[in-house]
Amino acid sequence: HKLKIKKMAVEINIIENGPILVKGETTVTKGGEKVIVGENYALCRCGESKNQPMCDGTHKSCNFKG
Picture 1 (cartoon, rainbow, N blue to C red):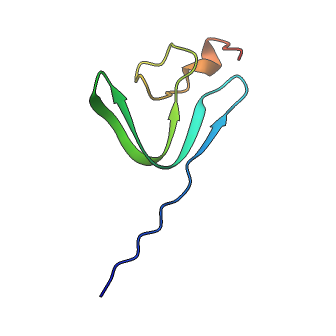
Picture 2: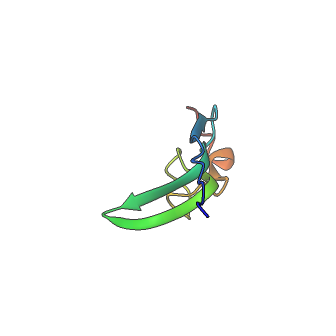
């Protein structure tokens, strides 16, 4: 039996005054080290998250505009 694997497209949405939303199987690396392997997550854009590179909602309290 042959196994068919369907690759899903990756969708990236930049939320006004908020994070980057990533949907689809992806890997994020930092300095060659895998820091995120997943399907759905939010990346920080404000630079203030205590959980970098993930968004922790700090953009709301620091009045991030972008």
